[in-house]
Image (cartoon, rainbow, N blue to C red; front, side, top):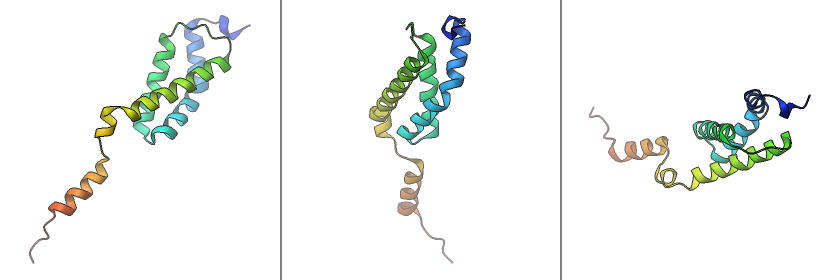
Amino acid sequence: MNEFSLPREELILRVIEKYSNTVYRLAISRTKSVHDAEDIMQNVFIKFINCNINFESYNHIKAWLIKLTINLSKNLLTSAWFKKTTALDENIVAVIKEEYIPPKV
């Protein structure tokens, strides 16, 4: 039986099971952030669920998911929100260095 003749819901579950690790690892390698990678992975599979593309094979699906992951990662890294944020650790170190007053002994 051709897996593409399965009910749509079952095909979606198989694709998520088969490619979630690939999408996640690619997203984390591009963003360097677990939280951003999780958000991207979620968005990739939401877009897959909502798309109306007739895929020819699992390789076609995989290529589409990889391209979408790369594009969403690029969008995040070039967004104004991402450019205006700084890592909390860097911020804390700067504040501590500037505002720290040692206690009087």
